[in-house]
Length: 138
Image (cartoon, rainbow, N blue to C red):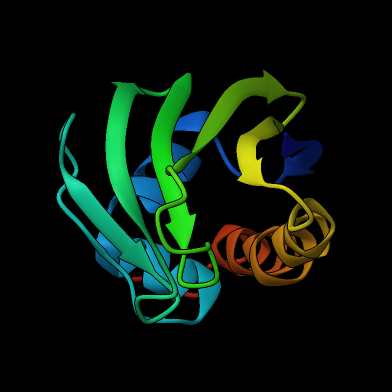
């Protein structure tokens, strides 16, 4: 048995801006405040949070959808990667981001539920709000 979760947020940025920040290592690092790398092509590898997260880009449908294999250093040895899917759709002057994270090792979903909020949605809100106010980004 595996865990899964879904989170939705409206962010003050266009789908293109969010898509690009998610798959570009330097922008991802600026957006989250932690080192990240990315080869922004289908099949390309990525890391986030100084290697705590790693995976591969499985589908890149700019600016609508990103699908990644995803795992953290806390996954049990031999556990398969989880699946992360992001859907981006315009919402007023921002973007509705729907994150669906499935195939998480059993018992770890609750931890990632709060982690997505604390380490992604809150920093993304601040990052894109600052950019909208003219604070330069990467």
